[in-house]
Every structure is written in C-alpha cells, then in structure tokens.
Length: 451
Image (cartoon, rainbow, N blue to C red; front, side, top):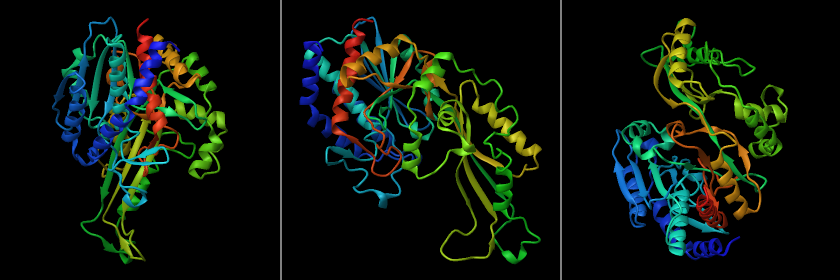
C-alpha cells in the first residue's frame, strides 16, 4: 500500500464517530416508501449531508418521493457516480426487533437499525470516504456525482421520469457504484454486476356482494377458490411459467458470464440451513440451483388473502380474494409486454373477472464481467480486503439499474454481510465493515487516478 492511501485510511478511522453520528440521525427518519412516509425529510437530510461537504446539490420533485443529486466537479477526465436510496422497507413486525428499528443501537461491534445496511449506511460510507480523501489529498482524482432517490423500496416508480428530465447529469459518467453489497457466507466480498427485472402485480376477484354462510357453497362461487384456480394457471409443477411468449426474446448468457457463475460459490447447503428447508425445487442439485438463481425468470406468490383467518373457526364463503405476485425477469424481457400477455392469458383461460388492480416494474440490466471499470473495483477490493471478490453477474433481486446502464458500467458493492437482515427485523452491519467500506471507496478513487 502506498503511504498516501494509508494516510487516507487513517483519516477514515479517525472520523468513525462523526460518521456514526450522521448515521444515527439518518436512521431516526422513518422514511418508509411503501407508506409514502417521511420521504421529503429523508431527501432533505441527504441533500444537507452533501451540501455540508461542498457538493452542488438539487432536490428534484417527482409525482412521488423526491430525487437528490450532488456533484463535485474538479475538472477531472473521469467521473464516478454513486446511486443510493434514502427510503427503507417497513420495519414491521416490530415485536421481532431486539431494539427500536428507528434508533441506532450499537452492540458487540454491530450497529442495528432500519436502513443501516439498505441503504442509508452506504450513503454515509461513500460521503465520508470522499471527505477523507479530500482532507488528506486535497484534490479528487475524478469528478463525483450522487443520485439518491426515495422510492427504491417501492420499485423506483418515479425514477424514470427524473432520469428523462435530467439525462445530461448521467452523460459522461465513466463508472457507477450501485447501492448494495458486502461479505457473503464465506466472508468474501461480492460484486454484483446486474439485477433481474421485475413485474409486480396485485390480482383480485369479487364473486359476491358480501360474505355468505358456507351452507350456500353448492350455489355460490367462492372468491378464494376462484382466484386460486386462476393462480394455478400461471406455472406448472416444474416451475415453468405458462403465460404465452413469456420466454420469447430472452438474451443468451455469454461465455464469460457462464464462467463467472461456475466460479461463484453458491453455498446451497448453508442456504438450506439458514432458511430451514431440505431440498431445492424440482430435485435440482446445487450446480443446477445456482444456474437457475442467476439465469431463470420466476413467478412468485408473495401473499394471498381471503376469507376468515382469525382465531377459531368460521363457516363462510368469502366474497373477495386478493393475491400479490412478483415476476423476476431476465435480460431482454419487457415487463409491460408480459403484463399485457398476462391479461390476455387470464381472459383466454376463462378468468376475465380476475382484475389486475395495479402493477409496477422494470427490465433487467447487466455490466459485462470483463469491463475495465470492474477491474478497477477488483484491484481496490484487493487493496483493502486482500482477496479477489466473488462475482455475481446478476443479482437474484431487482433494482432500477436499467435507467443507468445505457450511460455507464455499474458495479454494486458495499459494507453489508450475509446476515445483515436487510428487509427483515434486526437489520445490522458491523462497524469494522462500515470502516472498511469507506476504505474500499477510497481505494477505488486511488485507482481512478490512473484510468
């Protein structure tokens, strides 16, 4: 390690308490986008963080949560952009938390709170890494841009309109660090180079004007049963999705991506142990499950509601039923086309009464495994963690990466770990990872000098 970078690392270690103080204040804001709650406050806090560190800032209004941008223009040849979000998942069920979700709690070298991993902690990490570099080095090796939205946890439903209006802000960017990442079960850092797309729908049906006594079952249509019949048309027991043209136009997997998947340590047995199941669907072996995770689109029932679910029994015919379903999509699948095909398929299958109440989604995105920006991030990772990162060519999850993909290569990396519990109670990160995350960003800045 060169002496200059070592001095930046020492500065990072010395500002730990200041960074944790800002994170504490950030976590206090219950910016739950699913409830459209405190999004403006979270945006203003993000903007203030950037502004007090000399960024040119702007809060962009949308039809929903605002988008914050920050820019440090130092006249450099290269520009590095960070994409983050200041909204969080709902904290419920509150009773499963060991500490209040919107109060930062430090215990045994870990910090707990909703958003510490996903994604408020990363915002603090990135701002403070750049701050440390400036205080030690004076001049940045590249221009810096931030895009911080407030609806990522609600499918980024208004980010596209922001990107359309502010496209010039994204032009000329040489690389983007995306919002999530960290250590896997083997304590090895992971890079994620893409995301699956998503189509999320709510379906419902109403068969009666009010619930009825189950004595009427011979002569009345049960809404719960009706919707279940429709759902069973969506995929078969082999998990093949039956919507016509669902698999049309799926992009082929490149040879380098296949190799990256082959090299990736999937840890299927650990996954089974962690979630308490014995076998993969369809009798898949671990290598087959790994390939399916990275390359297959899915149809997943997220929740179903109908009839009496309270304590004890109640003999009733429910008047209505509702289901929420997500489709994870792979490269070149279009969510709106699939939505239209779903509607037609339900109609043609005899279910015109099943309504699509609402939907949202976006397509998949990927950066090539061999891109030069990926190599820059890999060298920086080696500097801090002393090992090569494991590469996920695409995440099993989704995000609005497609909006940025046309402008820049993207690497997602961060300070989380395999049990950070993002989206679950007791969300957490380790303080050592918080600090090392800053060091990794500083090391990326160091690599940008020579690009």
